[in-house]
Image (tube, rainbow, N blue to C red):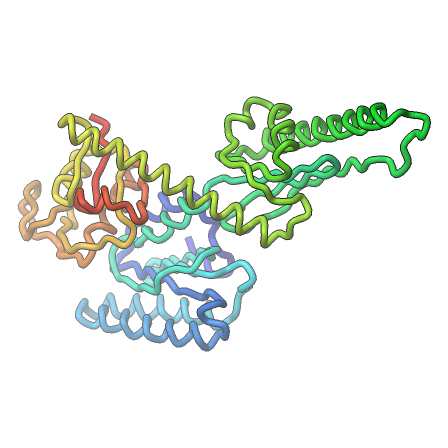
Length: 379
């Protein structure tokens, strides 16, 4: 399928589809950082693309004329796409996957920067895409006070405001009421507003489920509001922030991203803890590159854990896909295996192709000590 004019949507299914694609004679995978903070002018990131193009030509030169022709077509398509221009307001990274010999070309526009990289392989390199999807889980933010409520959702790193409830207090209250009566009436109106906001939130999240909900507003208001939420939403409250309902989108984004990062690191630490426990009892875990590759080959991996940025050379059999730290002969087919610069990328692709969960782990010393890669096993 040829995709050259529209960028492919990034989700788990898209990544798995890419991971299972096989290109002949080779697939060009190109990641280009176009973050405006780092590269304010198009010429800045185009210079980086020129470096990548030269690198790909150098890699192809030793692989034969068929590869050279296919890669030249890929590079031309990528270069034309970049220089034609794109919306930089929401795009900070680009991923290209191409095999001109098969008339195949896909583009994924990303909301976060990527590491500039270009590789030639029979399979697309998708590890950076997997890292992006994990960074942006399904998060939402609800800000409330006694008159207003605002609902935001993170959609691939962009904070989008989806709904607002404004149940303003009447400007003039009945002057015949006592001070106690006025306070009670005001409290009743505020409670009615919070109940309305809770119903609005539940109606929205029934259609658009989330994994984590962040509440913001005055402490006593948030406490009352949380008690009015449906249990589905109460169970997903991950943090409570003292941030006003009138805060700017940038202020809300910064506060929510800080919470999101804390939750992500905590979740990663829990998985690494499960791995350590499994290794401690000698059942259900594998650690280190060789043991983890063996478990992948044997189809025993349930969750693959990889330290973000970890790379290592290794071997892959082009016939059966066997992965190993040592070559050259495949132990299953007795055929020569291919030496890869990064066997970890191949391990990620193999895990995704076999519907394993892949977790990229950032700044976790425990996983580093275990060899920077490991797996929770199915059996």
